[in-house]
Every structure is written in structure tokens, then in C-alpha cells.
Image (tube, rainbow, N blue to C red):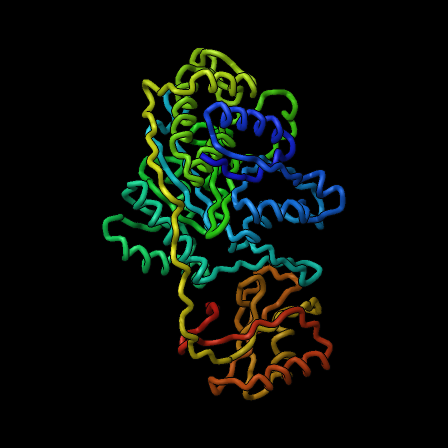
Length: 478
């Protein structure tokens, strides 16, 4: 069997220790891999590369298309990009898959029946990283949700459930508040879910869903979520299953894949031989399945389960009276290697069949809708008085064809008929809507000119459109 080239990064903090342990286990288990080591992370950042990764590393990743990555440290302060986010976006790794399983009674947990897989959208949402400071007092982060992005991650979740014999897919969203963005994710979930009648589906508002995940995780099977919710709740799920230090993840794209532990670089314990390599090792097991080495993945996974079962534990899961022996990072790897070929006796042994990575069709681009301009939200920096003073000034500037409809502050309507108790900052959304329905963009430009002439500081504009007659903007009530 020819060896599969993979790109390996030892990372920062505890990264080199757990990567060394993981690669030793893979080699002992007979993994046919040819690692190409690249330098990423803190050293690269501090050498002046704000992305934390150099061109030669990108060349390796694009050549091998398989990345086994230890945790890295992003220096604090402005100007440094998240390498994890950059890698996922650059390589199109749209699906983050995080299995979270309990290993009771050998790893303490309040949820011994827990067996949840969280499928997280990996490229969009607030992680688009589009942020602006608009006024002295107000900062903005844009939440971007696309129909193709929703379709890809939702279909991946259902296809994953079908292949793995899972019975239910649950969607977590907050579309009672974010009716357009999270509303789109929910609608796509229902549309695509209808194509999988053999798989049950349901949806929850993310706050109550998170509470139920923490309280009764055994009620869930596969959960699919937008990026931010998935990032937070996959860590929660891993911790309540037993330890964040044990969870690995796969980042899957159409052409490339990245495998990693879900935890950070833990610099406080770096170099002390204390870290649990299980998270990275479980990521590596997913990698072996991805590259078609299921037999090796099965051997490693069962030996790992047997090691846990015998009470040979690292410090994060060691419990007096329950664990048999406290092991360091490399000792844990040695114990696992000694048990290769063995299976657990109490925990359920895994059995993997050879399978190719999921190949999903690209979302089809839909025909353009009838898009019409009907108004504009103008955002001002203004601190010269109250809403009752601002409203008449803007009314005087507005044109008959494009009158001022309302003013909000931090999303709350403050004019007309606002409440004096509402606290206001220096950032005002002023909505102007056409009286004729369809609006000529020249009217928007003329409004901008008048606002500028009158000394108003316009920090942003959002055009208001309808799409086939339906508003493409949130209504303001009050």
C-alpha cells in the first residue's frame, strides 16, 4: 500500500507533545502516511506574517489536501488573523464534524448515554470577520448567511446521518430574533430535510436547545448549526461528555480536509508532559477514515478505548478511586501502543468499513429574483441632542418621494413616538422609504448630498430592496 502524503503542523503550547504522541501511535498501528511538516502559528505570527502561515505551507496543503494540525497560539492584539478561520475559508472546509461521546463509567460524566455529533457550518456567520468601528461608541460585526452555505452544511448533516445510521437531525437557530439570517438556515433545513424521509428532523431555538443539550444530551443524535453556535456548543458537548481534551474534529471540504483537537494550545501546561493527546488522536482517527485506512483507524480507536477502560488516564480525566494510573502524555501513547490489536471489554468496540469521503453536489445557483430598490437606511454619528430634535431636522432634509419613516438607536425605535427612558448612543439608523414603491437610485444620491451639505456625518448606508415583492430587510416595530 502506497503511503498517503499528509501535511502536519506541530503547533504551539502543548501541540508538539501531543503531535509527537499521536504520530507514534499512528506509526505503531501501521498507518501508511508520509507526513510533510510545516511551520505555522505563533513563531510565524511574531516573525511578521499576520496570517500565521507562509506560502510554502500553503503549497504543501494544496498538494496533499490532508492536514493534521496541533493547536496553535494566536498572539493577543490587533492585526493578527485567526489561522483556523483563514485555513477553513481558504481551503473551502465548510463542514466541521465533532463527535461527542461519553465513556462511562471509565471517564466521569453525568450523561453516560451521550452520543452526539455536532455538524457546524464552518465558513460564514459572524466568523466572516467583517467588523467596523462606525462611531466613537459603536462597533459592528456583520453576520453573513448564504443560501449555498446553508444548503451545503444541511445536506452534509443529513448525508452523514444516513451513512452513519443515525436516526435524527436537529437544527439549532435563533430565528425568532434574526428572522432573515437564521430564518434562511431554518428554511433550508426544512427544505432539504424533506428529501430524507427516513431520518427524523426537528428544530429548536438555540438557547433552549443549548440548555437541553447540557441537561439531557442523550435525546440528541446529530445537531446542525450555524458557525458561532456550533463552535460554542461543540465545546460544551465535549466537556459534558467527559473532557474537552478528548474530542477531535474533522473540517471537510470538497477538495481538502483538516483534522485537529478541538481544544487550544494550553501554554500553562506546555512542556510538562501533562496534556491528554486523545483529542488530536481522535482527529487523526477521522483522518485515517478520510484517506481510506479504516482498518488502521479501527485498530487505533479500539486500543484507545481499551486504554481508557483499564483506567490508564492523563491528569484531566484521572480520578482517585476510579482511575488505575495517572499517565503523562508520552506514557499514555506507550500504553495505547501496547494495546494495539486489543478491543475494549465493556465499552462498545468500533468497527469501521472502508468508505470514501462524502461527495456532495454543489448547490445550484438559482435564477435571479426581481430585485427592486424601495428605500435606504442611513446610519449617522450624531450626538447633538435627543431623537425628538433629530427627527424634524431629517424630515426637513428628506424629499417628498423619499420621506423619513423612523429612527432607531441600537435597533430600538426612538422616533416617532419613542420612549424617554430609552438609552441612546451616538449611532442612529434613519430609515427613508419611497412613497411610490420603486425608487430611483438618484434619489438616494441626492439625499446623501443634502445630508452632507447640512453637516451630518453619514457612516454607513444600507439600501432596502424587495425580492419578488418580499422585503429583504427587517421590519421595525414599536
